[in-house]
Image 1 (spheres, one colour):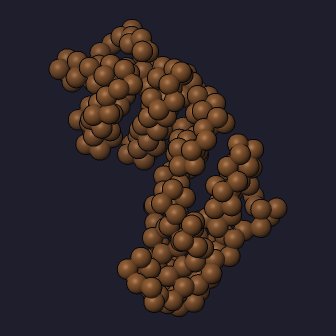
Image 2 (cartoon, rainbow, N blue to C red):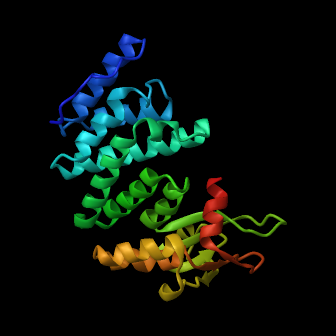
Image 3 (cartoon, rainbow, N blue to C red):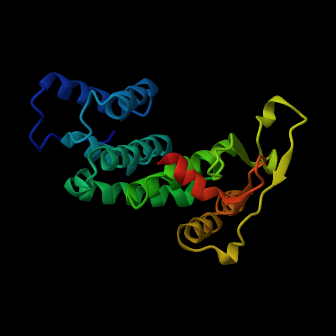
Length: 250
């Protein structure tokens, strides 16, 4: 179990500090899923515990560097989400700067686990965590959610405001549809237009290369569709899938 330390001053509310320490200690056993659920609720969803407490990122970094894959992945995912939330909520990067050594340890661990993770969805979540820990974009969760669920629910870019549409990427095919295709066999679909891997630039090129290098060809293939184009079934306008993912996350 990672060692808990309290070298920095504790927040004024000793009860909250004690609860946080107890939850982190329970999570660090690697056998308490409820502790992780409570940490997500209290640190991320309702903010009843302070993500800037000295224990949080320090202990999550210790867990990320431990030898147990599930605990490390849980710590990395939570830490990345907390950092992005703090960036957006306060419109500063103060939390990242304050705990730069811990963020560096978390990012290093995320990249190490990424290279040895065989499960497709676990790998996708580690890609998300890497992007969140780097902090250059705020929409990694939305991008990766579509890869994991194999669909994006998006808005057409048409200024007249077409209805929501689905972009499907995975075992069910590669298409867009204006209706919930899962509820009917008689839904009109439009084929997607994947990006040419050799023409990918920036983030798309980087993620595609990482997935191939890490042995996740299926993820790399899906990324060409996420960074490609789709057609709105209502107005038949062709649009960038990624641009609409970003627009929806904004």
